[in-house]
Length: 486
Figure 1 (spheres, rainbow, N blue to C red):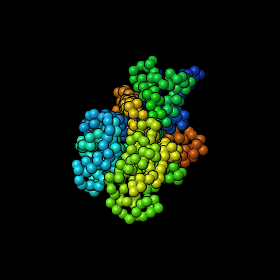
Figure 2 (cartoon, rainbow, N blue to C red; figure 1 turned 60 degrees about the vertical axis):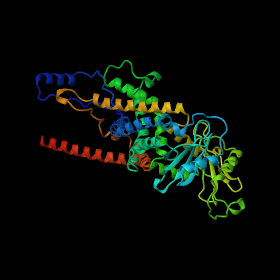
Figure 3 (tube, one colour; figure 1 turned 120 degrees about the vertical axis):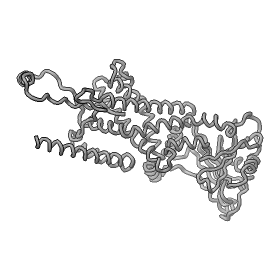
């Protein structure tokens, strides 16, 4: 996602003072100038061009990996059905289902070890999923799949938050390249810089269309451009404009669950009392519980718990969380990710089959709802197949934009024998000197605040600026030394 707003370095003047050079110089000095000098980027434009250029060169590899792995992740629903169809789906859906407690008993017989933690009742052609936790599995569980119409088990898998092994692997590949916490830096860098590249590219393209800003020229590649950098740039920019809203959305939602920016986002939600609410599960003697005395829960109570939740209006697909003891209520939570999202949750006292607390999705704070919708859209579940297709197009478009950006960098390289270079020169440094002092002061303040909120934007930017200033100072010193020697 490189910029081409910079001018190519001017050619050096011929050595010596032959008659042709003298005549040209005399004519230039005596004749009035009739040509208009080429328009160069202003202070802000040149500054953004340099930032867009270097950010594109350095961050684009992270974005390319994120786009490729994200594209693979969009295919997980179809891949899961293909690979795990026997476990996830029943061959003949329809008719009445056997009691949930009997399905759970069949799962326990299949998996005698482990602690029962959650059950997701099956409906339609989906099997019932019963989770068992084991200490050696950590956050993962063994999930036993049961045909809800026959009560027979269809298999078991090691899952992570109900995700199949394949989806878990692709999810981790997209988030951290399956490298654990160290790998999360890559995805956070990508999300932290994506919005910068998008907004900077939009500004530069808008500025380049100065005086010719029609919808067609802004949204479509230049069909009249000849081969070379102009054609590549028009494709890079026009496709970038089409992708801009979606890419900004991916950047924002990706940051919400990132390691550092996500933590700051969570603190902001807490300060605004906008975090995702949850039901109260502590039971007291007055509610029919055991007054805090722990006891083994009875899985057979699951039928009454589900019936109480359904009677209270909790419909659609749900997850039943099994408490650790009798002093804690069972929870039944909707798991509908399709629009309209269903996330109602109730707490149920299993000794009385009475709902003790309820949180409706409609009562969630606005920011919590936006976060939920954004996460679902990012994962491709908010609008089903349409959402998957849009994400796939975004990923493919981003891959093309990145490839065209690097192609521009290569196409702008000098090719003359005396000026040959491997790639194009970056926009000139020092553009900030052309900006008003108040603009520089405000800009530094804004960048500092954003860098604090989004650390993996601020830290790489500070490192680049320090390196760039050091290189600039070194080159200036060498130029001054050469001039003194000459």
